[in-house]
Length: 244
Image (cartoon, rainbow, N blue to C red; front, side, top):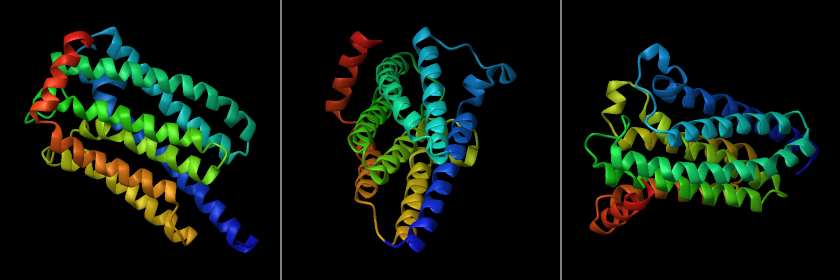
């Protein structure tokens, strides 16, 4: 790749990730404003347990860290970005642990965003699979930390992975009525758009981006297929027997 091609591509990448750093927190805020960030204005009930509150705090820290890391790369402060990456690993561990116990608590006692047509125990597979996908995508991003093209695209997918819970809470009746087609379909569409633009601008598909995106979209379908099976329901009952 010559210099004339490389410069526009770098500009495009900075813009793509700058847009993601803006859109990601805005969607999170839109989804969780009523139940967490602006709950005082909506008269929402208090959070049910300290674990749920801690989960909300940790996820907010993760969103903030994502924004900061994108900004640091854009500002070419790579050393600071790399040092902050070690904190991201520790924070990711907390995301997984607290996310697991929050999902178990919601499955046992219920929560407002759970689709009414899906049993709570069945729906627990959705947030738990979010955590599994986060481990895979974030772990792959860390593995490729010395290969920026792969690393940042996998981190972008790790953000897309966490959008369904926020999308499901955006109270637009016509969209909420679509259920999984909305809260899985919209993040999948965003991922496909980002991948399509990236492949078009670079004149080739990034393999890590493609593999991660296909895995993420497949996970949306797979969890819908198996969430009502007797095998999963048995596993779900076992989980909440000791985790909630």
